[in-house]
Amino acid sequence: MNPKNIRPEEIERELPAAEEDGFTESTPGRPVDEVARPAPAELDKLKAERDMLLDRLARLQAEFENYRKRNQREQTEFKEYAVSEAVRSLLPGLDSLDLALKNATEEHSDLRQGIELTRKQLLDALFKLGLREVGTQGQTFDPQIHQAVEMVDTTEVSDHQILQELQPGYTLKGRLLRPAMVRVARNPNR
Image (cartoon, rainbow, N blue to C red; front, side, top):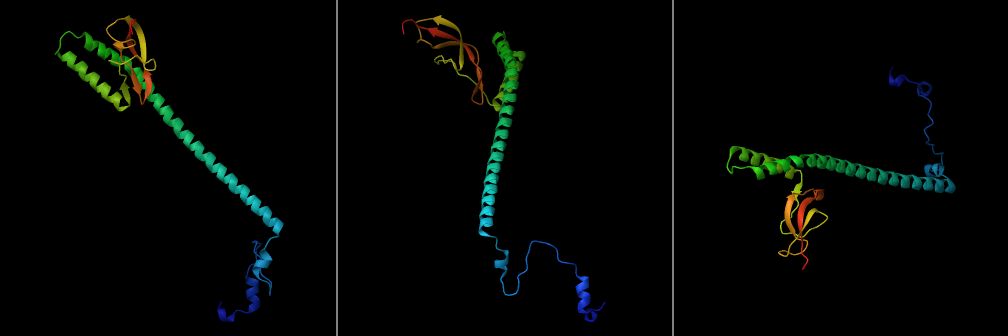
């Protein structure tokens, strides 16, 4: 079909009817703003609804952010708890290696060197996970990190001074994993 041969009445038939799209055409002599402007009461209602929806959106975003942070914190705590239980289960093995070294008769035997190496490797791996030994030598008894197994009467040191460590205590990432078992001095003169 040649565009020069098209008659105006054919153009009207070929175009589809206008859809209801919410737009209004301006009438001759009136600007578009006057035709599309809602009433003041309806405008106030729409503004209130918009404000309510924006407030709801802000609250939902804050709630979601709190949920995300809480979930991340719980996952971290669960991971640390799982690590602490695994480390706690390895401590008796470490104690056994210490006992074997303490009771070894020959100072430079191959067996002793093997036990020392195994103990060192185990301790290095546990230290990488955050395990730290609780200090006891020369310290005052602290019930938060020490467990008194025996009170020894003596006048040689001050009262509540740790005399001997019977079993080492450990912390994991700043939290007490196992208290150190100690003998504590009881000095009646001080």
